[in-house]
Length: 221
Image (cartoon, rainbow, N blue to C red; front, side):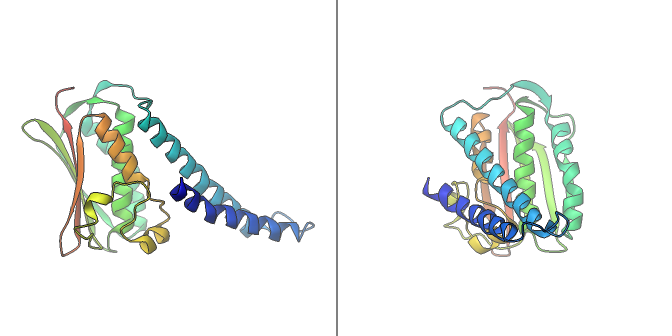
C-alpha cells in the first residue's frame, strides 16, 4: 500500500498543480490551454493503468484471475503480439530479430500469454541500447515451450535478478522513471506464467546482455 501510494503521489500532484494553473485563467480557450490539458490526460492515463494493474494483481492474489483456457497456436499468438511493437522498436532506433518455431500448440489463456509477451518486449525496447537488436525466440524443448526475449543494455546486478519480479521493485529507479514504468509489469507477467504452471526468470551478463526466459508446459496440468 505504501508503494502504491508513493506511485500515485506524482500524477495527483501534477493534476492538482495543472488544475490550479487552469483555474487562474478561466477565460483562456481550450486551444490556448492545450499543453495543460495534455498534462492532465497523460497523468490520468498513468493513474488508470496503475489502478488497473493493482486490481489485476489483487485478483491474482485471491485466485480470482479470469482466464479462458483453450488450446491455441502459441506461435501465431506470439507473432500477433509482437508485430504491433515493431513500429515502437523502430521509433526507438532498435530492431527486432524473430526466431519463432511454427505450429506450436499450447493450452492456456491466449490473451494473457500475449500480455506477457507485450510486457517483456516493451521492457526490452525501453532498456535496450539505441541501434541494438532485440532477439525473440520460441522453441520446443523436451517437456516445455521456451520463450526468450534478449536485449543489450544496462547490466542487472546478480543480487537484483531475483527481485525484479517483485511489485514496485526497480533495479534502476532513475531509468524506470525516465521510461514511464511503475514496476508492476514483470510482477504481472510472473503471476500469469505461474497461473499457467510455467516459470519465468532472467539472466544478465557483464556485457549488459539481459535475457528473460519463460517456460510453459507442453501438456496441460
